[in-house]
Amino acid sequence: MTGDARGIVIVYTGDGKGKTTAALGLVFRALGRKLPVAVVQFVKGRWKTGERVFAEGLTGLDFLTLGEGFTWEGDDPERHAAAARAAWVRARELLAAGRHAVVVLDELSHVLAHGFVPCEEVLAALASRPPATTVVVTGRGAPSPLVAAADLVTEMRAVKHPFERGVKAIAGVDF
Ligand code: ATP
Ligand code: MG
View 1 (cartoon, rainbow, N blue to C red):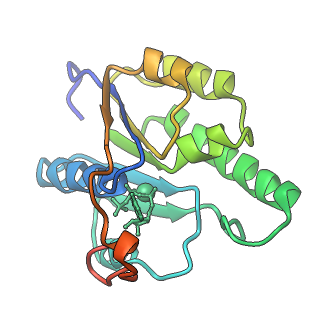
View 2: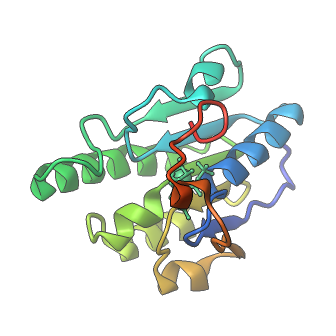
C-alpha cells in the first residue's frame, strides 16, 4: 500500500446478477496492482464456488468464508443471525487491522437487510477504517444509510435472467 492512497466505499446492490462478479473483477484488478486483498463471504453457498477454488492458489488474497453453517436455506433464523453476527465481528477486526488495500464484504447488504447486524455498527466500522482501505459491500437491499455513506453505488437491475426460463445455475458462470 502506498501512503497517499485513498480508499473508497463501494456498494453493489440491486436484484440483477453481477454484484459478486463485479466485486471479484475489482479483486482481479487490485491483485494485478500487487495490492493485498481480503474477501469475506457472509453466506455459505451450497456449492464450492469457482472463485473459492481459484483463491486457494493465489498469494496476496485472503478468502474467508465466514458464514459457516449460515445459509439462506433452513428454518432457524436465530442460528443464521448468530452466525452472521460472528462473521461480522471477524470482518470488522480484519478491516480495522488495515492489512488489506481492498476488503470485499460479500452479501453484507443481505445480512443487514435481514436485520442480523445493525447498520450503525457497519457505518461506524467504515468510518473508522484505515483511510487507504477500499471496501466493497455487495448484496441485495442495501439499506439507505449505507448507500448514503458510500462513495460509489451501482445498482444491478434485472432485465432478464435464464432462471426465469427454468435454467439452473451454471458452473463457471453462477458459482
Ligand atoms: P453473481 O454472483 O453471479 O454476480 P449476484 O451476486 O449479483 O450474482 P446474488 O444476489 O448474490 O447475485 O445471488 C447469487 C445467485 O443468484 C447467482 O447464482 C445468480 O445467478 C443468481 N441470481 C442473481 N440475480 C438473479 C435474478 N435476477 N434472477 C434469478 N437468479 C439470480
Ligand atoms: Mg452475490
